[in-house]
Structures are given as C-alpha cells and as structure tokens.
Image (cartoon, rainbow, N blue to C red):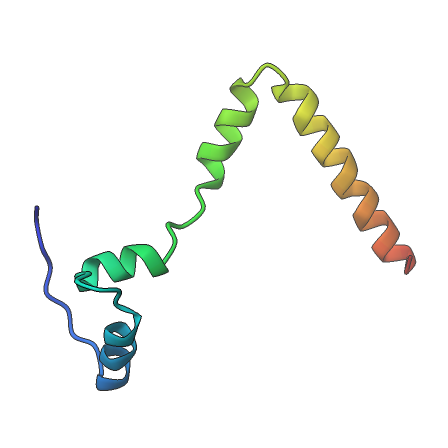
Length: 75
C-alpha cells in the first residue's frame, strides 16, 4: 500500500491519539472518523438507473419545489 507523510500540529496529534481504539493505526482512525465525501453524481446515476428512476426524481423535485414555495410564503 502506498503511503504519504503529512504533518499535523500538536493539538491535532493529541486528538488523533485519543481517538485511537486499541491498536488502531492513525490511518484506520482517520478512515473511521472522517467520512468519504458524498458523491452526488454517482448517487444521481444510481437513482436514474433504478426502476423508479424518473418517477423518483420527479417526486423529489416536486417535494423540494413545494418546500421552497412554502418557505418563501413564510409557512
């Protein structure tokens, strides 16, 4: 596995050390604590390719439009 060296300040190092469970490596702690960024495009492709894709997208858009409309009216 490839590795990369990085520097953190002492406060960040202490926090990382306290977050460790048992014999976890710092890499394992980071992967456990820091979530993967949400891939909206990947999610959208999966929704579009599902059997209810278009129907689901339309329902979500309608719901969002309704919420926006109500918030603009103050309700």
